Image (cartoon, rainbow, N blue to C red; front, side, top):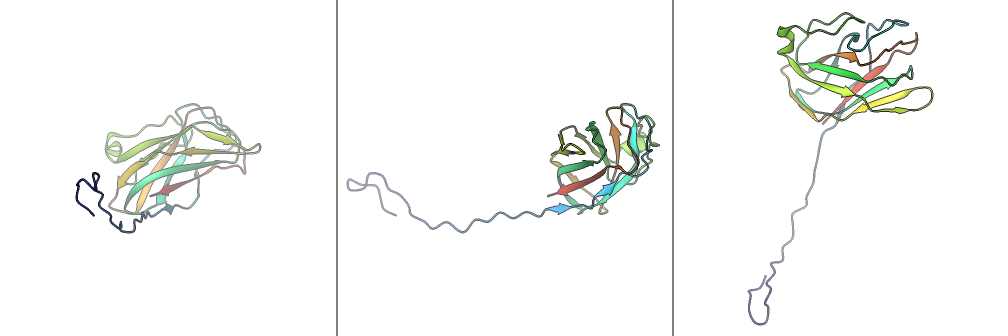
Length: 164
């Protein structure tokens, strides 16, 4: 460093910055086949899409990405409704309804409405940045369809989360 003066009107302090590192943990859940889907059943917008499912996750984190693997190539928007505790699921293909008691444990709802079509199938991706804090390492969930799904046998979709 040097002082400001006639010989050095713009003093600059020279320093060696400490090495900067950014670390993050990324946790990927297992792919979960959507349980309870009635194949060849006609769903309506707002229906429960399958039954309750769960993800083993760290006790705290931020859901950075939700990936919906659509093997039936429908590309119909879904909401993934998340809970911090086990809840009473709505029956598959019935109008999705949550009790007030269960709603008090709702972590949020993630819309999955952006799909990439790959000809025979599609992948839906959501990037919610939804933070959570749990007492147990499990998130409970149920999907709600926003359209008229009709899933063929052998084409049950799967879903997984990336947590940071």
